[in-house]
Image (cartoon, rainbow, N blue to C red; front, side):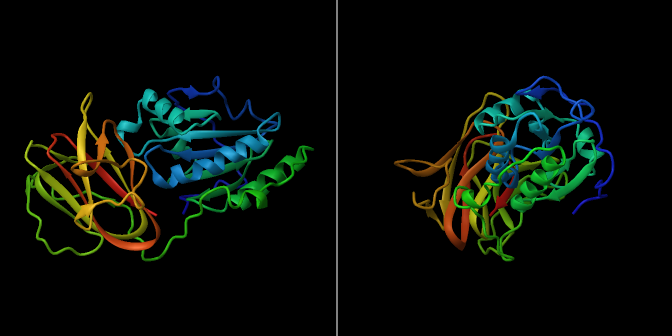
Length: 314
């Protein structure tokens, strides 16, 4: 969904940025003569992360004198605003194309954005010619880019069919648990007790937690946990800590350590079971199943200042 389509209108200028990565500063006016793809993303958004391999392939196949891809990093959370955090994420994901740091969401708003990720294709005259919100439609995106390259006399052979199997495909079910944020009545969130009977898609806290505008945080050295019964193939969570802290988070799936065949990339194991090491604010890859499944995911900690921002599922 888009607030207001800009298709057929002049592309707004890239405004109020806090810097650039992988390039000197660029402007939409200065890019006239080129076809431009703007990918609005943020590094803790799982949908954005899943779209990055497609963006990198488009950059690899088409970048040159007539085409440029710009990742416009626009944060959802406060911790995603500092340029150094964006730079670290760009390095971690191996992004080689230009990235604009839109930490105040100024350019995001000028383009009428409401959701991550969001792509806008601009022609060589600076006119918006195609817009898309969310994952998918990568073939349509590539076709539009190729059509606009033809308009400036550049022929580009599509490789879309040859790469179908090189990027993981995600089949979403209408039953997949939606993205879940932690919320409660302000100033009433202190001690939580798990009722032990769990409905799906509702997070249950146990222990001492405090609610902030963007997250809940565990505030005592006594053990606490958050449990969520979900339905999906994959489960992720945006977790964090305050500066210079490291928190261990034990992970259980249906009351047991995660089997290595179901574990996400951030899960580790020792004699006590499966766990995460949370050292920074980011998206943590926890569960990866081959099929749609229903599980109870429990995150346990005795560390102070563990922050839980949101769950995301695929």
